[in-house]
Length: 155
Image (cartoon, rainbow, N blue to C red; front, side, top):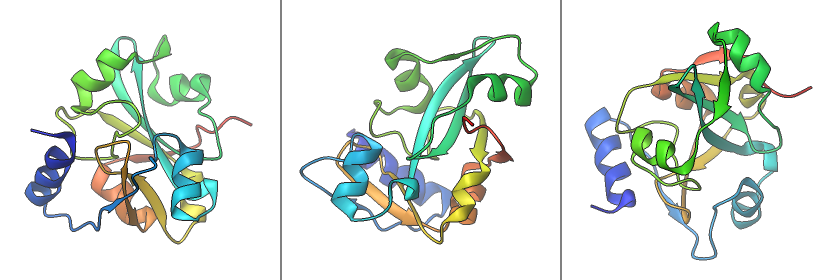
């Protein structure tokens, strides 16, 4: 099963309607996605996997910002938070880096969404591949992801 099919199947099972757009030139990075879509970099949602005391956690961050790992650690009450490697990302989500959507993952994880996402009317997130994205209102996206709002953006 392709990752695009996996995402489509996951959204159908979750009862979530999304309009997936494909960009052959790619949307692997936030900058690539913003250029392809023609939107602000901050409107791109990065779905990033970290390990908090060895347990995967998903952080949703706007494309113009970086995650403050120390803020994530404090938010979760963890001793240590590190960036997940490609193998853990795929194992946890079912998707490769560059195509990880904010929901519809292989396993359920704790999800934090940076409050900065709410600054936009519409945000764009990966739809399972480095060439596919979908638009959604930030509150709706955060709700579907089961995310807790947090302030985890670097200063």
